[in-house]
Length: 242
Image 1 (tube, one colour):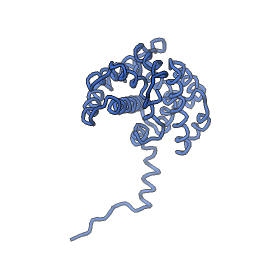
Image 2: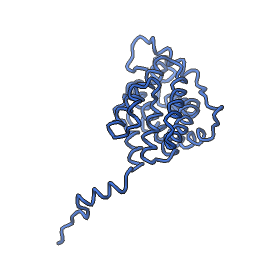
Image 3: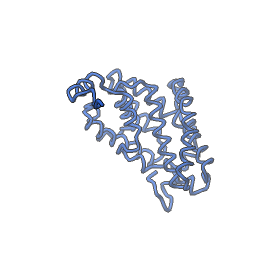
């Protein structure tokens, strides 16, 4: 019986890597992974306060909360700015990217939300420098660094399309929110996956909404979530930093 061996030698694999780079899908999967050390697991974005007040108390209400913020907050602020950041990086316009990142940080209504945005942006910048993306170097200590700005930089550097970048960004945000809900309520892992499945089906529509927004239409409409984020700053006991 013939022995089955790999058809590719190490030299062949080196050639494949060189010609097939930058593997945009794999880069997006890496950026969306919970294993990426940017500290996303530290933040609930007001969800912890909502659970404390029993506005969110089970899987159904958690799903409504997350989808509500996704539709009225993330899809109307983060995603349209992310798409513009992707275009700026793709055009090599670092000044425009910085301006857009400043605008995104300015939309964060609470001290904790601004600190979260800067922390995740600077943390991702450090990782991208390790990946050899030199454009991220100055962002490691940039006060206006945002997660979206560095996410868009990595995606555009890899050649990932803007829409796929937005899909990945929204997915990783939703997954972190669901993981926070599972810990806080608490819920079972199956409940969390059911929530993620429902959210997954809505994500393409939210990205389409973001794509259709003009510059003057960008803006959040999630006041209860904003107030929850503000009140969380003085919450007596906390698991999360926001």
